[in-house]
Length: 260
Image (tube, rainbow, N blue to C red; front, side, top):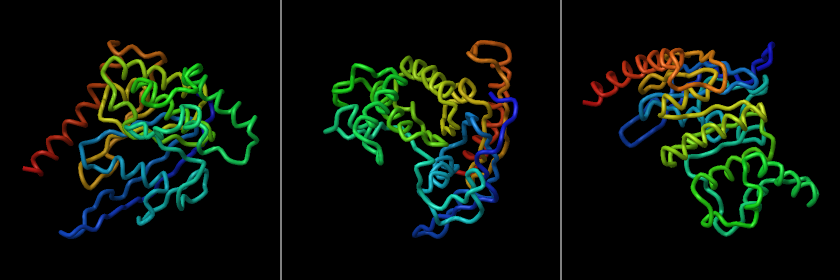
């Protein structure tokens, strides 16, 4: 990381309320978070704590909220090319080839420039040679790599990842974690990831944000000052995992006692 970091994203006093037939549900309440340029941040919490809602607000997909969100001191007032989202499902268009899916959102470049940009992203995610394949012809991990390439092709300032590896089997997921780390290190994009996998969060992140159960608040931000690549069985890794688990379990106990 750079020795001098600048704040990329500021979330201040964010409150999001959903109206239902039974009244109002407070999804997020007074969420304040500062994320530095080039950081990899993971957000964890119990189901329904507002993790994905927070990601959607940052992406500009939710605009009915109070509080302030600023990207490089510019207010976030809707979707923009400076942010890209990767979902749990790859959401590739089945009638497009891999290269057509990756280049779908490119505008303002000549055909040659578009092809070169798409090729660069496919090489970055290890899909060179699969340009003409269709999503149904590749594995789930490869399809998710194509989704990552599609998100990166526009050079977003922030990449938002909503359980991007959740649909993969355990071995593929671990492999894709290493691939995601490699891509982050090479691109140095700011990444914010929602995950339920605590070990995944520690393996990938500079900081782990633990959310309280509904209404979602930032309960604790836990730094992960470990050298990369990280040893999941190492003493320092395990100690951080214990700290995150302690916070998470306290919230889970509160969540289930409230639900019952």
